[in-house]
Length: 126
Image (cartoon, rainbow, N blue to C red; front, side):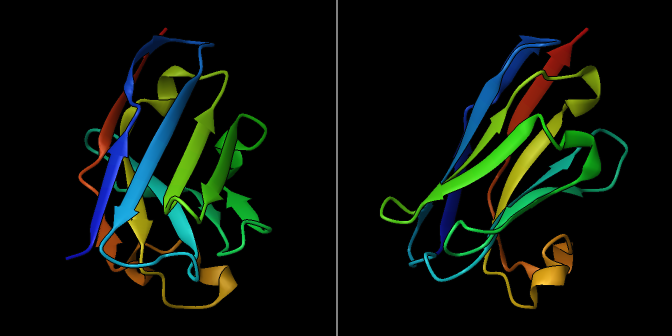
C-alpha cells in the first residue's frame, strides 16, 4: 500500500514562513520525480513545484518562484516545500504527489501522478 502523508501546514500571517513535509512509504520513490500541488476553495488543483529524482532539477509555478523551495531526502523518502514570504493568495490545501510517469516537461500535469496524499491546510492571513 502506497502512502503519502503531508504535514507542516497551519495558520500564519502574511510574510511568515512554513515548511511542508511529505513522507512516502510502501514504495521507494527515490527513482521518480515528485511534486507539490495546491487547491484553493472553488478553484482547480494547480501545480506548485516539482523535483527530479536526484533533486538536481526543480520547477515552480511563476507566482512562487523566489519564495518557495522544493527539496528531497531520498534516504528518508521525504519531500519538503519551504515556503517563505507567504501571501494570502497562497492559502490552499497542499498535496504531495508521486508516481510520476512522463517526460520532464509534463511535471506540472496532474494526470501524470498516480499517488496523492490527503493534503495539509495552509492559511495565510493578511
